[in-house]
Image 1 (cartoon, rainbow, N blue to C red):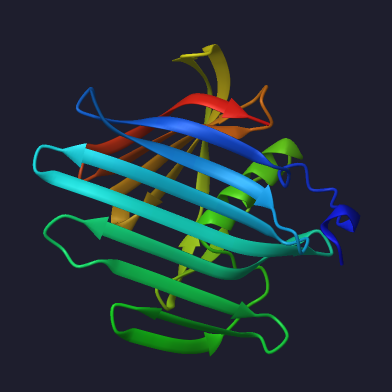
Image 2 (image 1 turned 45 degrees about the horizontal axis):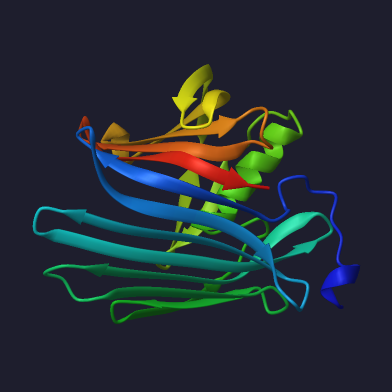
Length: 222
């Protein structure tokens, strides 16, 4: 079906782009971009890119997720992640979702899999869309299962509360959510802009009690 005939009532599924600065220990160490766009065939693509330089370390990453909307449900079709880090070989993750056959095929660092799909399964990028949609609809957050590297990760987001961030564009009211993984050793905090379509304007990753990185939005377009 042509793109101009595609429509969805999902509020989170419409084009946008966000630019971030990447911070570590109070220093700017790079930039990142998150984008959602509709393709010519009517499908959608979410992407995330980052470029970080810190002393001798350089790290470039690009993630893309191509997905479709079926009966107002987000269905990932093809997820790919490429990580290029100094002193390490490139790491490529590919996941292909066949919803007709209910199978997923993928590969990562020599490992390959072909596993059964389950309804509602998402990938790391479409997961953020699903959370935004729930917040925009003012519905209770539900646990989300994502497919990653041949396994299933069960994510339960906790609502921390409302917080005002002082960003480049001014004071931004946000809903702060938290995701705790690996028995509490890994925590990710998310700040969604309440008055700007619940865009993800800040992300903080903490490992073993230490902040690894924080992405802070510098501008965005809807």
